[in-house]
Length: 569
Image 1: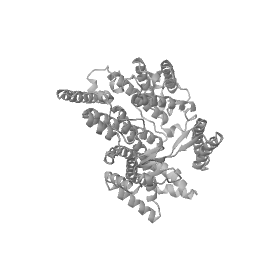
Image 2: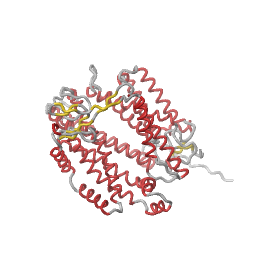
Image 3: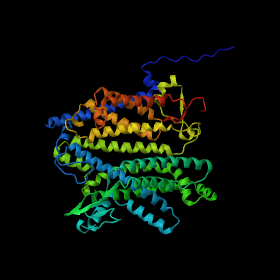
Image 4: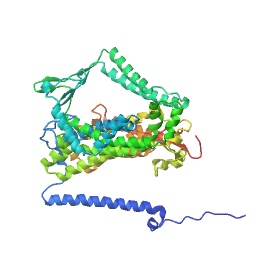
């Protein structure tokens, strides 16, 4: 009888970092990261030294001085006596407004044009071809200037303007005016009814999807959802005695007063960017639809499905795996192209922080750094969210496993046992699949933290508190990291992504550091809660969330699609 023994593992030696393939890759990446960080530090230090030699100080204290200029479109309170930091926030919000509205409108236009271009109706398909090819081949700046000039010339003066759509909109050459809601006693119940009906509509949609997958019967989900939301909200609105009204804009003097005001520059910029980007999205949609085999359509027609059902249930779900990746790039392009707003007088981030603030203060390096950091963070956020969504909709093999590299789960493998992380297609076949409903409260936890941090850092103008730009570097870094990890935990929680545990663990560490440096969490809750309540309550909620996510006994009830290794349940 022979006895086989495993070869003895060689002890670790320092030269194995560059000779052993097990360590070489990680070692070289660490070296490269250190080199990049040192180069960045040298660059910033060199610039600061050169500025000092020229008699210019390097710092962000100028952001707390009065801006001394007006902004014609704003979403928050602002005057010329507000600080440069407030002016920058107004510009950033204006950029985000264009980006959000533009992405929504461009998606609608792109999907519609992409589908219609494949229509068998010759006139419709050719009209869409003219739109796509014509718009794509004209520079977007020219389209922005042209649309702005058309609105300025065609729309009437406020004195001669007339309300359209039953008074819902008043178009003038100075801007568009919309009625603003007014809330009286009882309006809270209407808002709560609306929220409850939306939750009910989401639940019904998921139930209808499961029913359709099990029985093949298709319900008019969209109409039922619309009826549920509108019916419940309207009934509550009538029962409470019409507590929500509308304040319509009125002509007073030479202009309209009241309501919601949108400058023609905002409308022109949003429309031009949406039309331009929508043409590119249309081609992405057309490519995605044509990537689906015609046999899918023929099989659907053979089963008696109508064309609209075939498109919504069979074609588009499969086409999304081709559409989503280039769609991310189009969203990024639209957001960055919004910086052309300065050409028509719309005060976005480039016009405020990178324009007037730069010229007034002379701190070109600092303002451009902040502007680059803003566009970089927005672009990374859009890419991060859309990539998570892409993972939800892309087709995966039923037996594939998600390779995630190192995770916090690995630290607890000895206590909790090894878990196999599955793709969504695998997880749906496991018993007890799904996420426990109460765990959705975790979304509210990290969402509330994110909102409080953003408001406290960039919007709160309470007297007696120092601006974020005057804090120490350590405090600035910790609060910024807390905001970032709260955002990533919030997004991964929404998408039920397996990386949620890593983001939540990182956010917990930074939260503890923020507590140790004395970050006033009580002030972030607008004085509603004491700091100790926020600290201990937040710490307990975070520990409970992470504990359940790591040690949950049932499979697939946490934010992971997972099962224990060696078991089928």
